[in-house]
Image 1: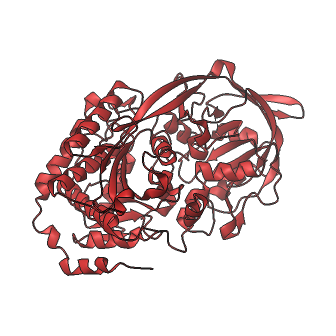
Image 2: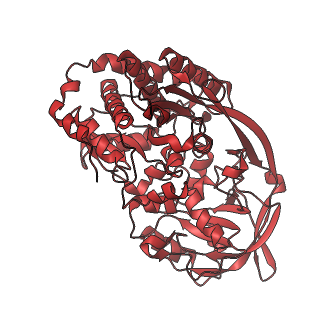
Image 3: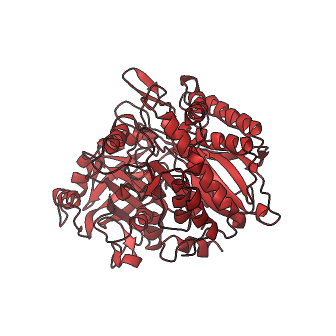
Amino acid sequence: MRKPAFLFAAAFTLFAADTAIDYASEGKLWWSHVEALASDEMQGRNIGTDEYRKAVDYVTAQFEKAGLKPAGTNGYQQPVRFETRTLVPQESSLALVRNGEAQPLELSADANISARADLAPSIEAPMVFIGYGMSLPESHYDDLAGMDLRGKVAVYVSAAGPVEAPPNLKSHASSAGGRWAALRKAGAIGIATIANPRTAGTLGTAAEDAAAGRGDMGGRRDTAGAGGRGAAGGGGGRGNRPPQPAVVLADKSLSEAAGEQIAVTFTRRGAAKLFEGAEHSFDEIIKLAQENQPLPRFALPVTLRAKTAVKTSEMEAANVAGMLPGSDAKLKNEYVVMSAHLDHIGVGRPVNGDSINNGAMDDASGVASVLEIARLMKATDAKPKRSIIFLTVTAEEKGELGSQYFAAHPTVPAKQIVADINLDMFLPLYPLKVIEVQGIAESTLGETVRVAAREYGVDVQTDREPEQNRFTRSDQYSFIKYGIPALAFKFGYEFGSPDEKTRKDWVKERYHRPSDDLTQPVDKAAAAKFDRVILSLLERVADDPARPHWNSDSFFKRFATESK
């Protein structure tokens, strides 16, 4: 791997930049942005609300204050159109048909229909169980091999399974776009998913969490189905709760669910009915999945009959983009993107009397860092050689939709974007000793971040929980799919340490809950130090004469070839 000479020179100034910085003061400035964006008045910044528009206005004002040039399509803003889809339960139904006899399924209790799919008004199709539904030819593993899926509904357990493959490759294959693309190519017309019993607790609770907008850390948009097309996607509702609307891009050319005529998530009760009379029982399947064992594949002795009715409407929410122009005559026409998502999940069911999901860490913290780093670059009169785009995106919580739109319709020439540095819920909950870098082994950005961190006495580590698929579960993935090298970050920890417990407790107790608010303990000085590391990373990427590139053994390098 080529290592630029200027990277080695940084070793001689090790920790020099760390000695004269007032992290306490910078941490207060960073926290002031979190306070503004995660206040109760912002009502959780859900897209399509007046409060989200206030958040857009706040970021716009801060970009102006930092001297950034407008880099949207309408000043600093890039409006994005969305379609909301809500299932009409009274006009929708599911049934399993055996030997000509229809067994009705109860919406929510047995299964949920996702309005995120391109639902056909009516459909009746055979069903085939395909294990984990994973297709990884690179690792000589393919659940689809030898299976006839033409015109059928593919049924699978929503987990990666016992596949011997690099974690990021498994993440891609089990993502919404990756999994459905393989199934559609094999001829499937729909999906029926069973929640991963190793992460979902008891089957059925994952669907309930998704409908509540909570999800889980191990599959924010995958636990309830492929890409969140389970209960969270406009399903049948739960109890007396109305169906939750699905949100998709109005630009249908960007749909990852194209051709998906039906998408269903089964609860435990419904799945037991699905496997009645099959050559393997549901209990057998779940026991194997719990033990992460290979699963059999076989035709199910039923067809799925579905009728669906969906109400649609449109709304708009904006990405916000500001540019610090580059100083080099040639390199200024290339761009490094620094991104974070501005939206959160809004108001939900009360927890201990509080219904506002403030989203302080998720992701007001990342947006605050984007704003603070822009301020620091102005304060230090930084003159990066490449231009830097400071970008806050919308609708990450709906499936990375805002970043997907920007990556497909960038406001600068697409071929000139060289990297994305994404900040999503980096969790400054304790002193910064080590940064967990997602994607560190995939591109030359990995070596650059090592040097940037070393400058501040910080170590780096790979993803502590690769099975959580984080590298493909936030906005950096939208850029990766267009061939652009990217990184994402969390505060790191050593296994068995108090820091590990702190982070995992946060996920369990605060993630996508009202308690992710301004009262939680946060290490502001550590956040400021993190910002300095990211600032150094940005400047190094912007000033390197050579573009970042994918490593030769990275699975993701194929996207760079495909995008040419």
